[in-house]
Length: 230
Image 1 (spheres, rainbow, N blue to C red):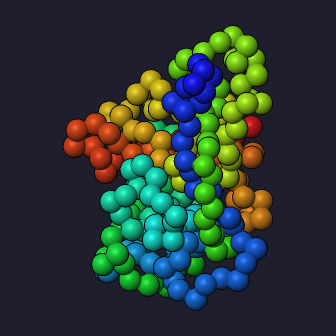
Image 2: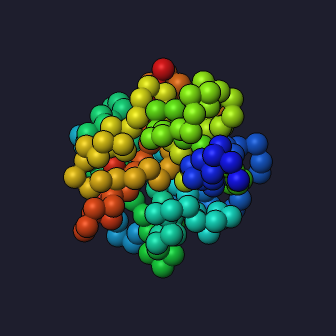
Image 3: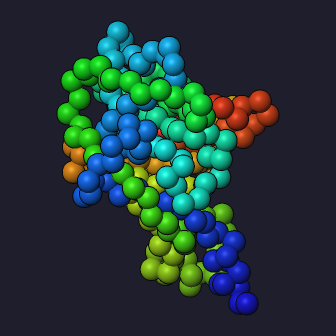
């Protein structure tokens, strides 16, 4: 195995991309959706921001996934909300202008969502496997040769879209909490939610929202968020 192949193996990650719409919606309220949340824990309240219900951005059923990406193996469901009044800032904590919740199978019950005034069009989602996902250039620590640096984007593909696992699809720079650990929980990237024209959702202009989970001692359930756009 040559140096390039060793390098490729060292940075390659598997990922799951979510197809948004284009197929008949399942009947179950517990399936994966973009722009809809139809379950939560019993007696749990719908999240709010400044007195208004948050907008449902997505729900994911991990039982539908072909495998469990890193840091997604200890929960069965995931929901994501954002404030109705505008996009959250990168340094705002979970539960402020954005909200991410996870559940085990025995915790969730079906709910009727409140009226949020959202413009997002909901679509069911289904997964497909990406066997080889590679980091954007900004996330590289080392490369084996100067020639490979010049040809990197042609040789190593980063998969965009709504993605679980793999590497973040960067637009402007590294995620502020990823390479330089500018967060007390030392988060690692877990998944991303891309802008979706079909559903009428944008992070700014053609942006991507990133979600990471804490790795520091006692901080495993701390989630971090950032978004970048063109």
